Amino acid sequence: MIDYKGRRALIEAMAGAMIAHADELTALDQAIGDGDHGLNMKRGFEAVLADVDGLAAKPIPDALKAIGTTLVMKVGGASGPLYGTLALALAKELPADPSRADLARALKAAIEAVKARGKSEIGQKTMLDVLAPVAAALESGADPVAAAEAAAEATVPMKAIRGRASFLGDRSIGHMDPGARSSALLVAAIAEKLDEIA
Image 1 (cartoon, one colour):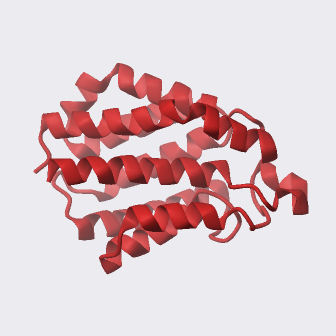
Image 2: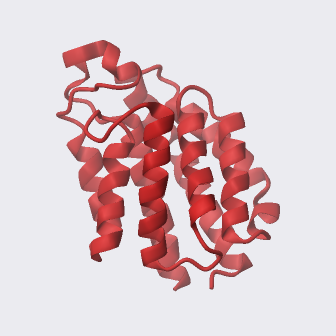
Image 3: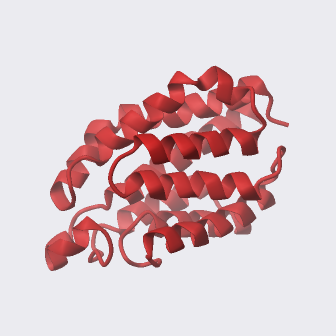
């Protein structure tokens, strides 16, 4: 069971990863998008961090619901609704004391929710191209962090089909998708903290 201290550590790890990598995410987005992904994610997770005590006091599903709502309200562009949908769908699917199998099942359901929200599919150079391999890694017992890092790297040679980057056509090739990178950073932050808590 992840207690208050553990939940607080997880929230701080997620927010810390987004805040620390804001410039990197913005640089990635400047290459193929609006150039605001890092700043938007930083703003959203700063708002999450501002309520870390209240969030950590809630059971995991309730905390995720509150985080999702905050991200929808605070993160601009497409990222807010997409990351908010991810968190809200996970909140709906996860029990208060989730197992690895629960995480895999919930993430698969959340991926379907993100697909519907973004009208996107796997293989279109988006955050889904990281989330799907992570769900598969969770299900198979593989390392989800390694899967996330490899999947984010694999977006570099892809041509964007959805999102702002798709306007660039072939010029989107050769750049890592910023949403894929932020997803991989969140997976790494969560996995590292879960290892410490376990």
